[in-house]
Amino acid sequence: MSKLLSPNAGPASLLQRILQQGRYETVAMLRNGEQLILAIVLPLMALVGLAVTPLLDGLGASRVDIATPGILALCAMSTAFTGQGIATGFDRRYGVLRFLSTTPLGRGGLIAGKILAVLVVLFLQVVIVGTVAGMLGWHPRLDGWLPGMCVLVLGAAAFTALGLLVAGTVRPEATLAITNLLWILLGALGGIVVPAERLPPLTQDIVHFLPSGALGLALRDSFLSGAAPLSAVLTLLLWTVLAGAAAIRWFKWN
Image (cartoon, rainbow, N blue to C red; front, side, top):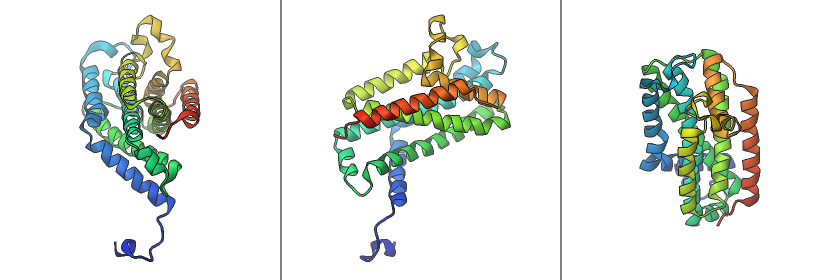
């Protein structure tokens, strides 16, 4: 501490600044009651509900084995898209983004800090959901963890890009409405929690092209068969690139 307070102490490195920003973003997310409900409570309620109801029966595996990967995908969408989108939208409204972008942290460091916070919260979600799912009888394939976690990070990247795109282009109130509405629609009908086979016929051919459907399918296949389908991975990559490019092009810092 004395070294940090010394007048001769040098400036913090970019990595240190990013870590500090990531820590601040993480604490802010975890202290927000609404965020915790969206990130933890609702996914756990959905997990228990799917595990005790017959909605997922007849899909070739136990209810909890099919439900848990979808719930993990829902967690990624909750944190990366809805949570980060709303937080960024209101930071933009109150001038926080404009202020931080002019500090030594810079715009790149600010975005890196937000991504770091998403990954930390997502790790906590995996631990909590995985523990509860294990208590309910979840038995994922051991060789499915590596592709599953890689796909989960890719999905978080896609939804973070989408969240930043929305937060940086519309008013905060609109961001709040859009992200919450899409969370409900994609969670219920986007193939993220409920497989396409259990959705209405009109939506079954569409969901695989959505980031929600691609992430849900990739995670279920990873934990059930040990490998993610290439088509779903490519879909997530495409959404990440397109949404990221659009956010870079149209994001407004004030």
